[in-house]
Structures are given as C-alpha cells and as structure tokens.
Length: 277
Image 1 (cartoon, rainbow, N blue to C red):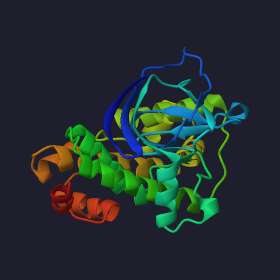
Image 2: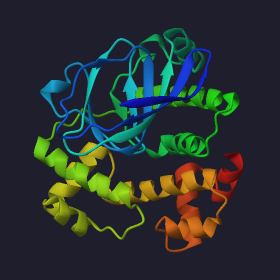
Image 3: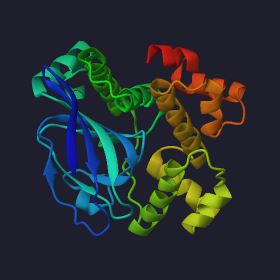
Image 4: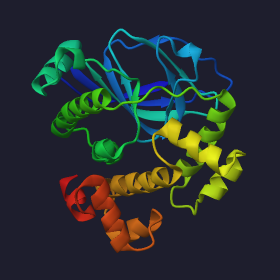
C-alpha cells in the first residue's frame, strides 16, 4: 500500500492511498490511529471491523465511504479482485469532536455506528467534488479544508441515520458480485443489462439482483447510472470538454436525459456544477 499526502491542515490530512494487494495476499489487522473517512475511487475490497473475521465484511465499491473510529482495529481483504484506490480523510480526535459538536450531533452520535456508507445519492456531490479536485491536481488549502469539514459532517449524519444490518453472503457469491461491480466500473458507458451481468456472474436474474442490492445498497441499474454520473462529474470538474461530449462518452444517449439525471443526482445542472468546481 502506498499513501501520498494530497493536502493537510490544522488537525486534518487527505491522502491518496493506492493498494496493490490481490487474492494471494493475506489480510492483516490494522488500526485507525485517527478518525478516518476514505472515499473509494477505484477497485473494490472487503472491509472488516474488529469482529470481521466472522463474515465477509462490507463490500467497498467506488463512490462508497469507509468509516473508521480512532483506535478501532480493522482488516481489508482483496479475495475477489486486485487492488483499489481511495482518497482518505484523517482527523485528529479533538478536531473531529469539535466538527461533530458544531454540526449538532449528540455525544452518542459523534462516533460511527457502521463501517461504511454505500454510494448513496446524498453523498454523491461530495464524492464527485473530492475526486474532481484530486484529478485536477488541486492542492490549495481552502478547497480541501472546506471539503474535509463537509465530508465529516455528512458522513456522521448519514452513518448514524441509515438503518440496516451487515449482510453476510457466502464468499463465492461476494466474489461473483465483486466481479460484476468491477466490470461496471471498468467501463460504465458500456451497454450492460441485468441478463448480461447475471449471466457473467453465473447467477439467476433473481439471485443476482437480490444479492447485488444487499451488498451495494442499490440495484444494478442504479449502480450503473450512478457510476456514469460520477464519471461525468469528475470530468466536468477537471476537463474543459463540452457537456454534450462528456454526456455521450459516459453512456448517456442525449444531453437532455443527461441533464435531468445529473440534476437529480447532484441537485444542480452540469454547467452549475462545473462553475462551482
């Protein structure tokens, strides 16, 4: 694993973390020295808490957020795919406590009650902004400082508000869904149908749909759509290309459909998102 500091300030650090581990590398126990929120940019892996060896753990996919409380032990496994890349935000305990208190979180809500946030619509704008800033090579203090606060407050709010138990699927099934996730993320613009993905995974349509939704917190169609929009948002923030060209390259048939989908996901038009970025 290679970590490179992207930005840092008083009590916070952002790192680009590249992991090259694969199925033949044995997971080992690590420890969160600080409060950690890692946005998965690429790849996939299993994230387990202190008792994670009793199950497969949480499936981390692009757009999801890994959540870590300071002092907690964890493991990351790559049993079903090679490597991943994350943008990891780290906070000193005092700073995170202050951010949580200022955001209105009660004392019991100032720690994470779950291991991850799936790639939900509510956090999509922050994920895209962070990825776009990183891809554009922005290392100025102000944008990262502001984003670190927004990431922390959003993660706390949604982690403690979401419900649902951790899903323990057989390792063979997790491997099949992971391959499907990676196939989507390798080329979000490709023509992908439920039949195609289920067939490639070697599962029935029903079993594939049910398990995919359990592990990723969204249907395959929603995952593909969100992956396309995330890719488009990153390109809008980092590239000067026309909106139409970006929309077509990312798998949208026409710009009007893209504009509607983008506004629904991010709350603003593509042009407004580009200006704000």
